[in-house]
Length: 403
Image 1: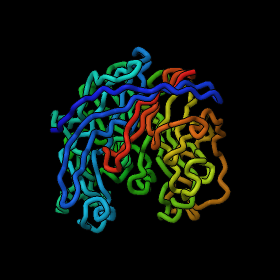
Image 2: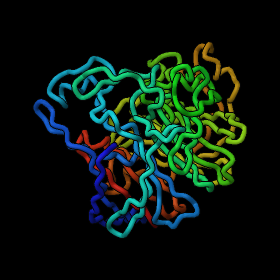
Image 3: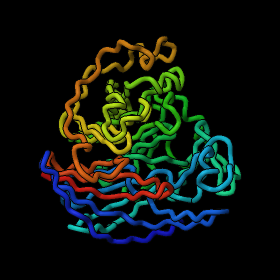
């Protein structure tokens, strides 16, 4: 369904004396398509860097990444990027049949190799698309023609692998989490209670066991990160941003993000926790951004209910260590009728303490929009950034950090 070509490029080695991190960067080049527009040519590549994961039993140089829904352009940006305004509100999909895909990658000293590509499929083995679900936002093709909602469409954002070879992924549209077989077939999609009505005719199993309030996410700010417990009994996942509860005004002003613990065997959320994001002005290379520019884009489990959280704007990324505790699950904050809501409240208790592990503004030549961390151990990380399929003409890099 898509044209793919791997290009191996030479990396560069930098040393940051301040924190004793060695930084090795390897540019990613996975070609997708060339699209000729009215007055512009789009050179698209595959944005493989929406999430990353290192499986504990793999060698240290092997890791997994995942794409999101595919190339997309906001309607409001179509005139600037494409020479004419093609739609009023929603997203344009230049490659409508793009399939969200998992990549297995081996990192060498100065190049990388794709070992496997696993395209996500429905229960019948048919590849799914990245086109919007009903209840999210309108979709259009490259000519501005409306595209029907796809009940099977996914905006994949993060992944983990289990010992049985299966995967769990985080997804933004629903927002949802999905269990995939080792070949990419969807075994189950877990959505907020009530969202299942938007997925009629989807050819896979659907569970509506996530709290209904998860559906209050702002559009394109769903579940961006996922982690697995050391014993593989529990998943942790996080909203990308504060909820739009009761409205987008609350989301734009709040800096409190909800994170969850999910019992895999019981198909049940068993914990909900509060994480406070830093003020936007503290992100040194992005100090003119508004508060809603701060996002949670990745998490990784490093111990019993202990995680590293990736908090970012664009050019600056911070990594914090947290311990999940003080659950608010089932409290008044989960009741949509509560007013003022948690996101509107100025006095919120039970926020988890956090400890800064790394601020990339202290390092040199780091990529922007880092969205994935394949955590080998505390002294060896592999980071990857999302280049939005090359639409904005910046590159994806695999960045190896080591001490």
